[in-house]
Amino acid sequence: QVQLVESWGGLVQAGDSLRLSCATSGRTISSYTMGWFRQHPGKEREFVAAISWHSITTLYADSVKGRFTITRDNAKNTVYLQMINLKPEDTAVYYCAKGRNGGVSQFQSGYDYWGQGTQVTVSS
Image (cartoon, rainbow, N blue to C red; front, side, top):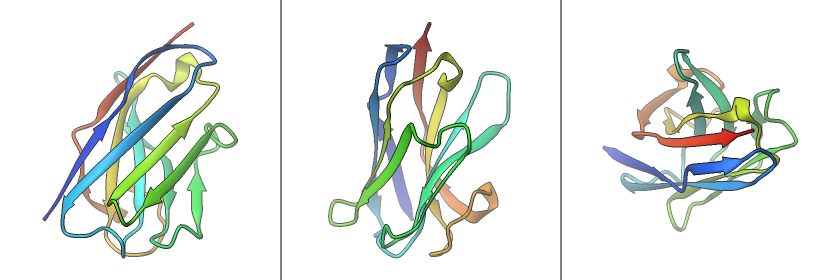
């Protein structure tokens, strides 16, 4: 079992930055891909970013490339999502997820544990 808790979402203005954290406990995540997804109001959850267990490989949705950066600290069992130049369309609930294995995936089926999410609201 793995527990994931996202934090540091909030209300910001367009152009601002936020750094989300995902603290994990229970089973170590050091051997697994980790990902971030988001869900806009009234829409399905979508992929944002993923990082391999050794941080060598990262994958981003086209909509966030160049603005979002995913990192991880395996010693702290924590994953981060640095977001800069935020836009109103980034408003969503952001979820952290643990991958089923070490392969980097943009598909929800590639993840088996999920956090409860943290709200990010970007005003124009």
